[in-house]
Image (tube, rainbow, N blue to C red; front, side):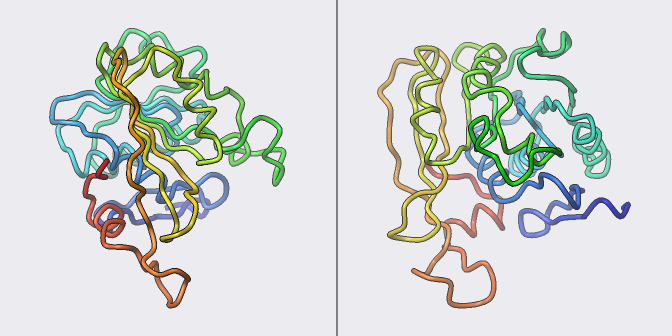
Length: 249
């Protein structure tokens, strides 16, 4: 491991993955996104903006036998995802390119599931750094509409979209779905009981017409305030983040 990388454990240490020491680093968001996917052995999954591949590898740990692919615009992260694939022995087809101009090899494919963690901040709102890969990962270049357009094109009819996003942007997310998706399930993620959700996880099916469902929230921490050292996860959060269980909708 070189000095500019760290080796980070996920799913209670079941996975050990390389990430940049500086810049964008995946955390529980990627684990929750992977947990939201109701995939079965033999199905195909594409992650848009896969970074170092954390969500894909977490998904494979729960559902082996998937065919995994990722699209990443930053060459350093695409290379790191390939390196993580080689280290773990998990096969992932990593494509380098912009989701607004998908590489031809990927354009020829369709998938059962598309997953994405689009940038959380609207264009011009990410102000901590005006440069660098962290700014690119957290602040929009392509808008949410571009992300969902790319997902719709790569999904087979009846395929499922999975997105994690800031709760403050759920209206933007729903607007970007338009009529191409239905059977929408929206899962709020709250830091503690009685606190407002900070994240939402969305699942939707291409071409479906069922009414949307607002699901019960996932509460991450067990106590109303931070009372002790350690993560203090609820039992449900512990089962997902440490044991690799699926997220219940």
